[in-house]
Amino acid sequence: MNTRGRVIIQVNDLHHTYLSGTPLEVKALKGVTMEIYEGEVVGIIGRTGAGKSTIVQHFNGLIRNRERGRVIVDGHDMADPSLDVRAIRQKVGLVFQHPEQQLFERLVGDDIAFGPKKMGLPPEVRRERVRWAMEMVGLDFEKFKDRFTFSLSGGEMRKVAIAGVLALQPKVLILDESTTGIDPRGRKELLSRMLHLNREHGVTLVFVSSNMDEVASIADRIYVIDDGRTVMHGTAREIFAQPETLRRYGLGVPHVTTVAYRLAQDGIPMPRVPLTVAEAEEDVWKILSS
Amino acid sequence: MSEPIIRVENVSFSYNPLAEKPVFALQDINLEVFPGDYLVIVGHNGSGKSTLAKHFNALLRPTKGDVWVNGMNTKDPKCVLPIRATVGMVFQIPDNQIVATVVEEDVAFGPANLGVPEQELRARVDWALKIVDMDAHRQRAPHLLSSGQKQRVAIAGAMALKPKVLVLDESTSMLDPAGREEVLSAVRTLNKEGTTIVAITHFMHEAVEGNRVIVMEAGRIVAYGSPREVFSNVETLRALHLDVPQVTELAYELHKRDPSFPADLLTIDEVVQEIEGRLEQKEKVGEHSWARYHTGQ
View 1 (cartoon, rainbow over the protein chains, first blue to last red):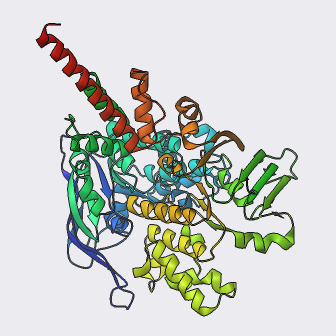
View 2 (cartoon, rainbow over the protein chains, first blue to last red; view 1 turned 60 degrees about the vertical axis):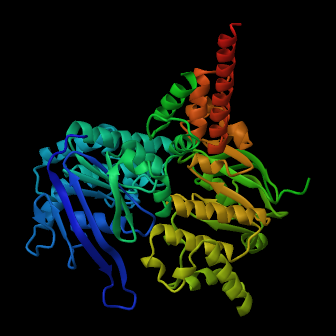
């Protein structure tokens, strides 16, 4: 999405320290600044321990900032002690690294309906929400609603967990390494469903990942975090055009991007920075057949 | 040829063997792993990869058939401890594998329990932490580390036992690209020094690391061979909904456009060389025709 809407999440010079004031104190964030616009897909990348998860946990108030910096979500200052955090959590849904561990109800339908129930929605609205959320993640409503959650496969559990977050109809969906450990097919399916949610329903996606191939194929813009700070930001093509800088931050670029980069270094005029196999194929073919 | 260090003979396994209709997670598996091998197992979620790996150190025992580790049958209760000393394991989620409250104590836990004398214990812990690059964090609390760092601690813990075989069950899935590369290069080093490696992964470019690859589907081995043999069958793998390495996919797509472009390239180097070779060839041809034009031939 290139037409930028309004800023839905604004982060200014955010700092956060875990176990502050103890010998085990760890400074996790030391100055993060970013803007997320309504309707876009933003990738947040960085080596493990860079602070990515700490940042996104500020977006729905799981961590409240009490140090330097500000987080504004949909016009609300997250440091405001009188803030209605529950309202924020309905707007900003967060799916964790192992979403299957987010399940707790016995039946699939109940698990997904938990959020809408807590919101006080009437049963028929809840049912519609559950149906819609299940459709979004690719679970058949009739077939799955009365299944036991523990009898599902890992992939199905993930879908249920994501549906549980979607049932709140959040404006922003944060996926924090939520595709880790799924096989390539499951990952592709999940990504395309999330993109559909973004394109057709306008849900803003924040995508935390250490899988460069994935980020390159999905993100409009990317923020690179290192050692608790924002160190790079730009469009996916701008970011992945800098493999050496990324390497310094413990990251990489998709293998096909490396192929193009190496060819360009050897003096072969490459038309652009390819981000996917399809783009690389097109570019290389152009050169080979010209 | 030397004796296999792991031999899997006609193994079938069911998690509910006594049920009326048992579901078999593994069916008629036959496999030999030789000392020094780097075997990679791929296949999608639920295909039986982890179930098979858990047979390698007697965490699971076959419902039918036998698994032999260094000549010991995993069904023999007396052999369980020596088998686990032979085959070390690192799982996908490090939290399940970390026991101590300080990183270096966690790494020392295994060998300390085997009664390794203090001096050697220290040497092993130092070595293992260095190999996964967690030296600087040795005094920290594991639960405050990031997932990737935790995974490196878990790997160090397994390595400190100096096993003959190291089984890595999707152990790099939580790491960042640099962390993944560090672990892969540590594993490569261990393999060069003689440790037999069995790695389960969803990252197809990691599968290229191995000298042999097996592809699993519905509890059976459906493809087996060198990475090049296995990954050149792009269509077969796609039918199984598996990926091939990105660069192999690129080569394959180019091969479809021009059959003379080889479809079985596995690495970035190979693809770059192939493309550049072709461009040079074209230039030469171009010069020829240019020369011919000018000499009027």
